[in-house]
Length: 78
Image (tube, rainbow, N blue to C red):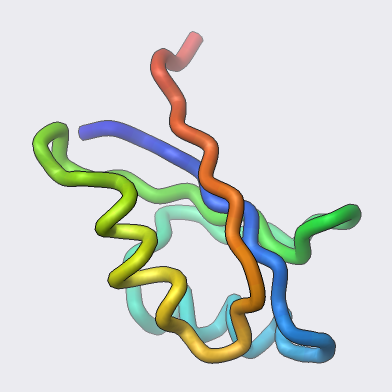
């Protein structure tokens, strides 16, 4: 399994709705509210052979209330 993070910018007033939708979809292992340029930070896991770009495009970015995303691919846990 490979882990990666997605920072999510939400439409104004929609951060809690987006966080709930992510939780309901059961695709994120962790979801955090953040301060700064993005509203949420979510951690995801996919199988080694699964394409992260397709996953984000087809399962995350389709959720209502998401304005923008920034994906951070991780390589190793210490």
